[in-house]
Image 1 (cartoon, rainbow, N blue to C red):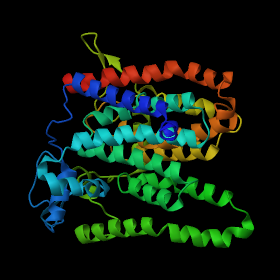
Image 2 (cartoon, rainbow, N blue to C red; image 1 turned 180 degrees about the vertical axis):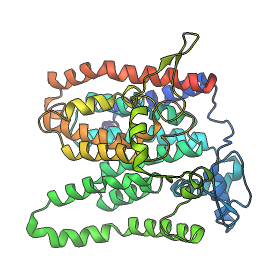
Image 3 (spheres, rainbow, N blue to C red; image 1 turned 180 degrees about the horizontal axis):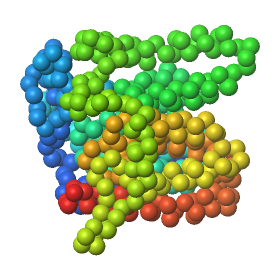
Length: 404
């Protein structure tokens, strides 16, 4: 019994209860029950059609964003979440508890954020704080509340699988590559973090051993490659192109003169990502509902990331790829429809977290200096930022679901 007890991380249990408790409290405060029906259940509808041997949805659902191709209606988002929902759809049909599943993914994201921190020997208190900072103090908190909605479920799952990929890179190469493939099947731009993983793999080996390492990488990449083959085949069967998952066939992009992606969108979208909330004519603080607001306000861990990037020992590749990621997102025609915050920027949070974890591991907060003042100072100086993110997302989520 003592051995079992010794293996239980009490801090991790507190983390799970804290994240789940805040998530539930915010859901109820914003008028949303985890048991509520999900009207934006594109992924469940797609899973049900797959189980019947059909690739299209069979009919139009006017309230959903559907790709129209050759007179048929398809889910216009990457397919991985439907794979996750297949067993639930098979057992429960359209009554699949999408919101509960999404809430579980959110809590699991906090767990893997903590595990990632601990895997780099960060102390339990620093690991606990970092997990709260990125999840409860970030804009992903908003996404998790009605996380079963098609747009939000993909981002929740992408966040989780990207963090899992970073966690497993030093433990299980096949699992790491497969998790990244899962993330890409939710949000395709997550592929830009592959260089971080590959660099870590090859830097861990002597150049003389690279031949054997390359063979090992190829073998370990087989599960990920098979998942990619599924994506490409599904795309081809639906849209006659292995690289088209449907978004280009949404009416809004079919009618756009510059298409879905263009450099002409970047300047305006960058400005939108720095927009502050404003006072309306009644003197009420109001957030933008479309195309984003100040991303550093809804996810203040970006501020910590930016400051740390100028410090000694910071892994610059994380800064470069996170910046590239945001730039690519800004090349999209929109920065997200009706929502609170700057939800597209949530996709870059795993790289922000991982960069800070590696930097902290090199500087302070490790188990071998558990009581060291440096770790405590990091928490102390960043607590106001965390509380800002928590309060802004808590209030903003309630605002948009009750007044937005």
